[in-house]
Image 1 (tube, helix red, strand yellow):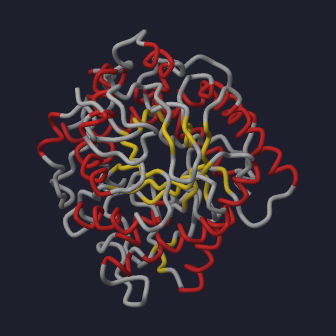
Image 2 (image 1 turned 30 degrees about the vertical axis):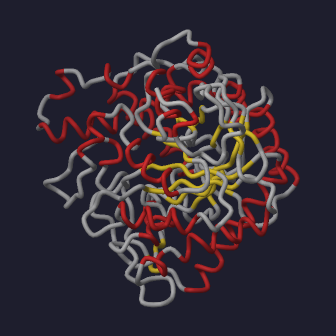
Length: 445
């Protein structure tokens, strides 16, 4: 294992011969310090009320995760426009919040931070990936429909320039509201095929005005969002970004594009960069191989040998970035996490699904009580009866979507005060989720 003296990381407090451990604090460029090297990556909760307000369910699940020992808790998608939700049940922040809305957001932030964790609000706009049940008229940089759907979605309408300016303002406003509510930072969702990611993609952004064209122009929306947020919250408040290392689509936002954007980000006062990849358009983000249905750019071959499937990309970004880098996706063993922190891969390890099956896993990892997290997704499969009549591709898709529903439902379990129910069938979880989201969508205001 390498020691700190073997590579240059400007955000370490002291360059010593001591290896970074999971409980080593992390200093951020803005002056704040995260208590350790584990972060909960954003997972959509779907627990907001019909008005898009935080509820007691958010308080309950984030209080539980706040006790987990995880140093940074990133919320699920908080949307800046009620007309473009990522799913029914998203929290939304629009304009000035009334006293009740602020009270609820503050209670959510306080619950997560009661045990010393930093809780950051992830803010975003769903763009063309907004499901039809929550968004009858989705918007995008250009009117480019999805090729493959995660949920049923309408074809998007191209944004007018004044609408783009309005959305930029909405991001800045939402960040300020989150700061006033007591969150200790914000993360901008610029990945996974949502609106900012769509602007970056030459497949989706076909504009010929200042918001489209070459990479610099396609990145203009992202940078205007970040600058507006920084102006709103000031220099001492943490601002992070979730960015694709690549879309993994031929002709899309490439790895080279991503590394160029990272280099430009060095001048924007960013405090944390989380590297991820893929979009929901063809489900490769969730592990489905749709090569026969959608032209796809394969990930680097070297990632196959790595436990964490975006770690190779995070390491390359970290060599360019002047801000700390977080890598999320696939980390399961304690050894690999500590190794990634010491070999130059990343400064913060992101966890998501492991916190759904064991909300206290971070503390166990930090203390060395476990060698790895639960590998529950590898122990879930469709039964023979459920596979009946499906071909291999359909089985793979049903398995991955069922696994996603399984983890969504464990979040509901914890939010409603129950232990995660780990014996659901995948199709059973999918049926539960669809019924719940249909009900939420029908009641949206």
